[in-house]
Image 1 (cartoon, helix red, strand yellow):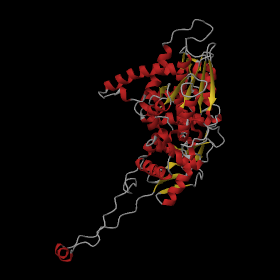
Image 2 (cartoon, rainbow, N blue to C red; image 1 turned 90 degrees about the vertical axis):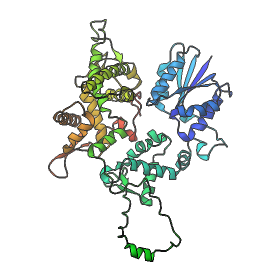
Image 3 (cartoon, helix red, strand yellow; image 1 turned 45 degrees about the vertical axis):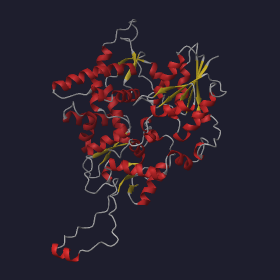
Image 4 (cartoon, rainbow, N blue to C red; image 1 turned 30 degrees about the vertical axis):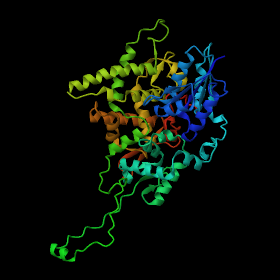
Length: 498
């Protein structure tokens, strides 16, 4: 029996990657006495040299830029399974959703099974730092293995400075700090390797150092934080009379150079971002785009792609032959490119197709559409989440499918903020629908989305502070939106289980 192992290296906490790389080496017959003839590793290009030097005979499945890691593991597993060489393939991952999903990939010829790395005993390695020895090390050791506290504080300070978070209006919630820091250091993406309390410790330390302010009034566990303004410089003294200066001037005693200004402190004169900019920042921090131009272009293309599908063979079944959701979105992407090219050419504006994040918007829609019950399968029911949804062939869209998707995006924004004021409909509408819609239609569309969420019991209307308008907030008794669980999103292939 020929066996192969697929290691989801991306899912492993950074402080444990070295340990599990050595574990993989021991599992292979080429380097150790393990049961596997060949090993395949899903890893980033940056990790490739390290892995190839550590274990002979492994093959790297590189993670493409912007690609969902879970989808890459599935693609790698399918490729290994269909290679025709192995009778058994084991997929090892720290993510329970991956180890459970791969069970469905078995065939009559090849058995595919999942192995949770959380249950793997990793022996202590004298050559590694203390924090890397076991997966159950206390959080302080994990912190030291991941990053020093001083480096983390400097990164937090720089990230807030780049975002112009120098006032409460431009501040960030503590739960949004990891995505913000990940822009400068990708290791913070999804908080891999971080203990739950680490961001709280960082915020508390920064407050004690005096450069961070925090407001815990509305949510003590998730304070609003921003950079304190740099102290105002002393008023400039008028220049002395040239004659007096010449008489009194002498050689300086013990000259001291002026300290270099701190580049991470935002001066109080810096212009804060606009309200619309801050709203867009929230959407970006939740990995939901907004990529408005591309999303609305796919909205135009997807119904046309569905309409072009060949008719079904059976008159009693669906009216057309379906395709998986990812396939339909990829086809819609190509048609959307053509539509946008024509749109911008008609306005004599350039459209640089190669620079557009098409892969990301396909990921977002594939993630949100099943949650919004926007796509209909061959059985006439909404496409389910997770692995089952990947195999369902989409034959139709819900009558209001685009409103359903946009309502999920708006709900994600509401759950990440303190609510949406009625007077701000134009601003959030500009974030979600700019480019192709008149302002009046945008305001009306936002009102429809808010009404839909209220009717579903997910959002409630409260009087505004000024007593004139209203503010719309997420109902505290509403079901938790999986898109915003612990500040990060599940993989688009996730099955929705905890």
